[in-house]
Length: 364
Image (cartoon, one colour):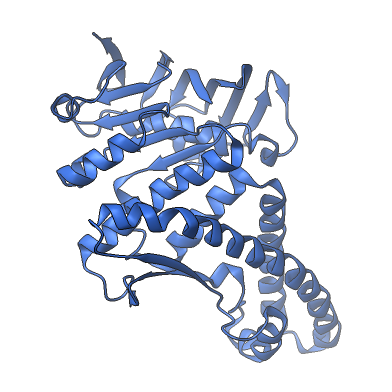
């Protein structure tokens, strides 16, 4: 799988940009705040309909403009896909695949498989559970359309239930609202259980890959294992939902379910989320991203597109080498402040672009 070209109009700090990519390694270098990450963000958006930063669509449009346009051309198993995306401040985004508009954004998922690795990902272990849920949801949504559909339905129903819990203050309507609550909870349990089981399968597959990677990264000093932690503890989801209903009615919010679950990272019986050193946490995060790449390759029988956003500067030399040695067969787009680090690693560079103030120039 390769991205062949990208066109941007009025996206972020780019008025007009057209890029053709090499099938192997593409380096974007320049000082900070010049627009390097914006290029990777546009590619990620083209494949997932979302910004990796969680930015709202209207904030991706160039300042002073009302809309922007992205066009990405992808080659996948000798078939080309043109993905067009229009973002407007006043209406939902429009997406077309090979110039045919799609009705649901979810139809885009699965055409492109992207692994995004940024310095923020190195903090995924020490940050809160929201970051770890986001990691697993974004990856599974690219790999499994059934999961994406279940997740979309589940999130919608959680919002409906929360609105209903707020409306229960109306004593006159309370009886009918309680009946409605029962109906929503049946749906919540259905989709919630599907999500939990699929996440557990994902963790099981990741564990098969990450243990060997982490063992090598730590010089044979650590064994790592991921454990899925449902918010309902030892209770089933339906039991926990019933048990917590009175509490939920008081706080006007749904307190248990996949939207509250977490992933535990155990290194030789040590929960490194809470007790690991910063070095242990960052190494575990690197192991996780490398395992993600290998799992995607295994599932799709192809290589994903890898986006590395100024990650090397955050790693020591050993981990830099390990990462670079692991991605030699994948099309990679890398941002950095200078190319010396790649020359020093004798890393093969196929295309180099200099980014300065929203202008991108190709260099020899």
